[in-house]
Length: 356
Image 1 (cartoon, rainbow, N blue to C red):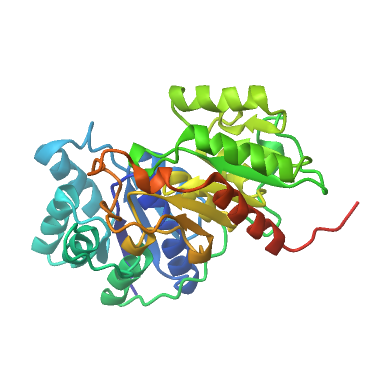
Image 2: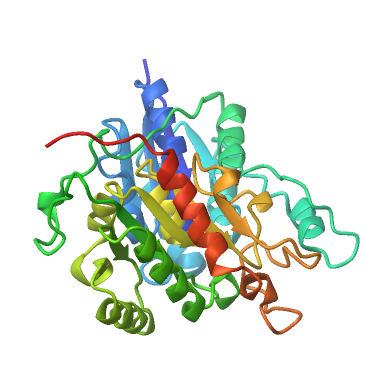
């Protein structure tokens, strides 16, 4: 009897690929006899390589080896050698559409994601805006699987055991977490400025959190050179701060540290989705975008979302639309104390830790 072999395609940014992890993990656990291969960009290997025994990963550099139609044809020839029985296009862009067409011509079972473009346009419209919750990315992913005959219930908790990742695998400067100490993660940046809370105001949040919790440790996350300079300046002014990203060499190491946080404070960004994979609580700050578009982190709560009530927002699904007002008021209008209060509420709701 031929074993079913499902190909899942998703070429996109880290955050959207990370949102696929809970779906693939749940699918693999509920269909242990199903072989699953995820096709994505090289960076995504860390998400899927050890996710489950029946999950494999194939990387494809669409800007290099598999660029253009010639490259996609070469990729298709490589794929058909894997004897897939069904194709799930979780991206629906030019590259995945082309591959989908080739598979359909060869009479494979193929389904693709519904990105609900019309509904998203109504959500971000400046006139006659329809402000309502749309299908989440997780709903859209699982809907594809249902149409392929693999209904799945999302039961994913974390990429780590309940005790978290092994801190001995990261820099010694991170160290072990003391039982009395709260670890608070802060990832204050995003790829688009319309999704970033003003750094000078975020520093006020940092100062207020430290004032309330003088024994806490604040672990900062950022990637670019400019972001690192801001984080280093905070570390110079607040001894409780550690520039975690400067000490960590990979996504998997960042995930390990995130799994030990009591709470993560972040934007609508890749760090929100990475932290969500570790099962921790996240306070997320939203500006141009809105959770109603369907991209809130996995298993996160709307009560942990901080956002300003403004008639113009959301103005963008992904945050890549320049502010129509020109002042990013949707972020600037949020009081730093409001954010600090949200972090405080989450900390107060966590179970009390006991031990030596």
